[in-house]
Amino acid sequence: QVQLVESGGGLVQPGGSLRLSCSASGWALEKLPIGWFRQAPGKEREAVSCSSNNDNSTYYTDSVKGRFTISRDNGKNTLYLQMNSLKPEDTGVYYCATGYCSSTTYYTRDYDFWGQGTQVTISS
Image (tube, rainbow, N blue to C red; front, side, top):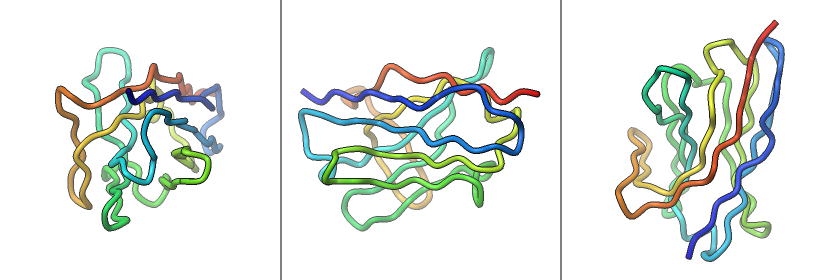
């Protein structure tokens, strides 16, 4: 089965940078449409970014465009999210998940796989 493990979260000052990693096992990353969701306390889970496996297209929610970059290292079976110019509103638990991914939308279905999440806090 597919297993996803996130890492790289932490506490960062506004304007700082952070790089999240999602290590995949059980399936070749190059075969997986996969991306990142986040959830802040009291807020609904939000699609942040995804990477399509078929045409290398990427999706970003409007609030992170120009600041976040999603990438893959297929040799290491690892997905990354480079986050720059971080804002307090970026605070939340970040999850990687397989799903449907196009340049305009990213969502999961009941058969998709999720990681355990990693906490990102932007403060001070």
